[in-house]
Image (cartoon, rainbow, N blue to C red; front, side, top):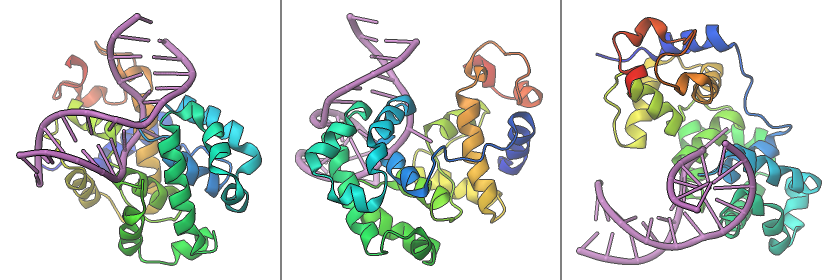
Length: 216
DNA sequence: TGCCAGGAAATCC
DNA sequence: GGATTTCATGGC
């Protein structure tokens, strides 16, 4: 049986409402945040972004000495590593004159391949950038999504690509759906519905009987 | 106080 | 291809 992700999307949407993600004041901030949040709690990313505030444009960040950049993002963890990754991304982005609309003019899959070739950008980071900065519909098959699907009783594939493709097969080719579905899954994951036993007003209450949602 | 958080690359075999 | 290790801080 094919999990109906469109149905799940509607359930989450009617319960939490539109989220209008990604939480960033600019496209550039979103792109940097995507790298900073790798295996890192968003709270620590937010601290780093605040320190980066004076340099939150590609032109300014490019001129920032690496040691200074590292100092700013220290709170996000893996800071030496992420300094290299941010700089690698900036080098790639510069070929598009740091203009997201130029990047967005590329074909989605070709663009994804390009991003994956950049040092420090893997599948999840690439998909987040594609969806929230460059307007390409891809499903972000992150840890929250896998955990939710598992709890709803799916046999979730181990490979990232398999999960992504399976979800994409179930959804309309609509950017807004991909933007909201991922955001809603995130918001839901951080809500009290991660608790067990069954919490009050769980959006998945109807399917709970047929799933292991509140028993794992 | 130990454990984990919106991963990815390098290095094994 | 898979399994393991490295990268590191802050919060609970």
